[in-house]
Image 1 (cartoon, rainbow, N blue to C red):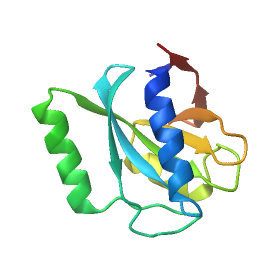
Image 2: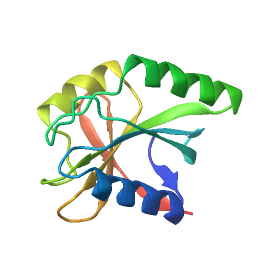
Image 3: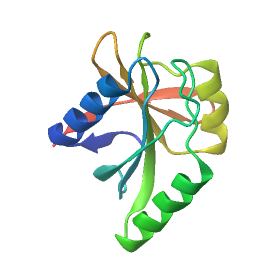
Length: 130
């Protein structure tokens, strides 16, 4: 995937959710087709940590069921970095290997979104609003 498209409303929902989850990281699953986000599944960070996130197996399974029911794909994983830039941490890079989708990160400091994919290396891809 060379880019990801998301609506201004969905970005607003994700940023408000992230701000409300502080001081902990927030997380969500992004549903859609190809590079277009069309639905969000806000999930709980079961680690309740400001530097890590984990989505429970139950919520992951639920997310895939919802995607299937809506005839959508899981095209991305979203999480926030409450106190740092929107760039993948070493932990993120490790989990990107087992979850080869777009990783979108929101910075609680800069209030910006960035998206990344793992190919042979971590590559930043553009986020387009629609």
